[in-house]
Length: 288
Image 1 (cartoon, rainbow, N blue to C red):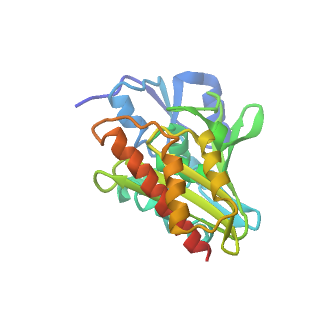
Image 2 (cartoon, rainbow, N blue to C red):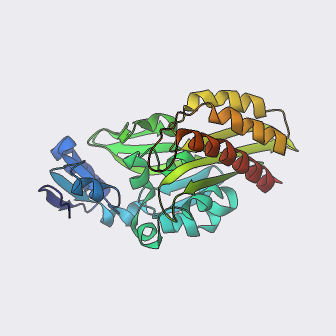
């Protein structure tokens, strides 16, 4: 059995307390909430923080979901189970429920948080794709105050984010736009596993015609900049089977999956195409 290296433990009492501890210990510290990604990495010595700052007491401050006419505000300490069970989110952004149904198992969903998922920045993590297709904004707070970062700029690489060592993610904001809907799907080796490939899509329609589109791919090393070609193709057309199939083919051309124990690169590229097709059609059907 692997065991983590030695570390010290602090339990933060508030957001300001957590920021103060992070400011004191810098990049020697990591925050922990659910811990389902960080602790296994520590056991494998892939991560070796000298300090763990437990932010579970912050759930009272950061564990709320608020929906208003402007959109949704999701606290970083909102558990996966809350996202799965939120009727308000499911009514406007059913993509959250789609994703949460295929994330891990009840034990993980009861403890893991959306903030932890986004800050882990795992390329095979589902909620990152969800937030990308919804044009989410991340709210960071540090000693100098609060700042916002678009989700497209929040992840700067695998397991790397734009958050400074003394900043904490406090909230995710989702804008609301009329006449739209969304969907997520993934293929996994077994229930609750990391994705072999996943896809998310969001569409906004004027009657039957697409006026705005967003897609995202999980675990296939996608190039989001290349998806502009897909959006340009979709806008101005009804989202028919033929249109969705061609859009899926375009999307699959902008990913570079690796062959590994989960499947070959060709298989993953095929999944990217098929899952993009399915989620586009599902999203369009939900609008209607």
